[in-house]
Image (tube, rainbow, N blue to C red; front, side):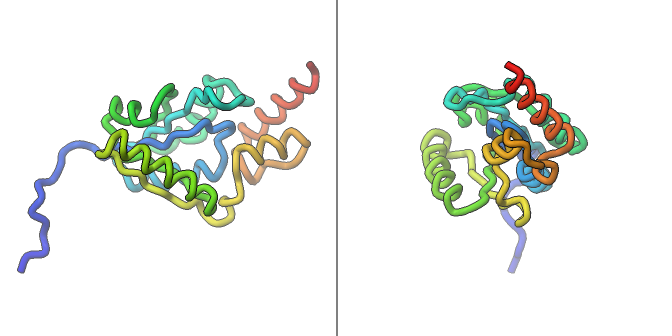
Length: 175
């Protein structure tokens, strides 16, 4: 009896895409990136244009912040994208989409999106990852709100992003 697989090993790198607006990139996002980077040969963080949201930071700033936060992870690339995530996955030859789940509300929404994405591109799997428990309460929306109201977000984002949030809110108040 053999316990080895009869499947032919693939020589293609396993590429995954982790998409979002990342406005801002939080320590919860960072945790999911580190977990996903350990599972795949290459992880592409796809920073979305976000037509449906008014973001605090520009696309260019969000890409730069995300790049700086993840630059020490060797197999991570940060790219901007616009359009359907499944079209982006096809262009990048990705085999998976990574999604972070904090709670059941996230699961409800993300499972619906995963089903729709499977209809659009069945060969791309969706992989759900949970951030470390102390990070599960962090959302970009809450971080922006806490920062706007003068709260301490230093345990929710890296120091450079905390400083950028404070500066953005000071600039908004000055106008």
